[in-house]
Image 1 (spheres, helix red, strand yellow):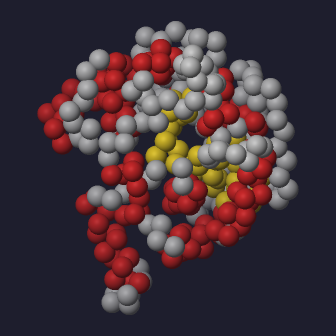
Image 2: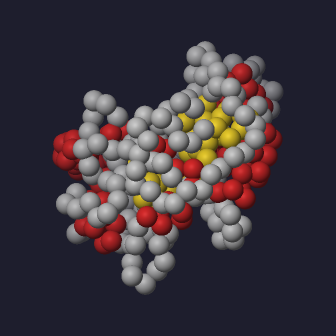
Length: 297
């Protein structure tokens, strides 16, 4: 169980591509034992990660253990981003017979096709260089507590990202200021992160907007970071300037069950975030239990 301070201390450094080995740069800024605690910590931290207090957007990502680094699945050992072409080839060969049923059918031509296939892979659980985030703080908390194994006793975590500050490492267009958040259909994303991209001055990931091509992404208010296609990917929280654009909120292990119940009370359920027939049975059971028609499971 993590023992972290409740005080909020965020140091702002100049933008850096350097890494800090395996030592975590971002420590927990608070330890939430309820939904109310969680929201209070976000409000207190807002002024640190959004120093101007103007036009600031925050993205949230829940993880089942506070000690996990922010690294995409395809970069976790024994996989490598070099394996992407293999996963993409296999996915396309197996998915093409059902392509008319995919959320974004028809898939566009040109470079955009690569990105739409990559997002389909992410949607269906195939390892990619993408990492999911949400504009909704409750969504981040939901994924933290629903994925966390309560019998292990480890704190979960919600990471909070300022995507504009992260993207100040990039100049995606000459006519916008650094910090612009591009859509993956823009050719400039392919320039930095496409399958034939050259590394242009930074090994950082970037914040991007993906195709809103499924009810699930819309319901979860989904956004993404995309990591460069390099052999050795650095976790986002291990850059030495990570405190400039990242915060981490620990979710107390002993309070996970309570927080799950609170989220259900507030209408944050699996069916609300995964609105498809695969999850309708769970929603029916939940509603009948809340109505007192069937006993709690």
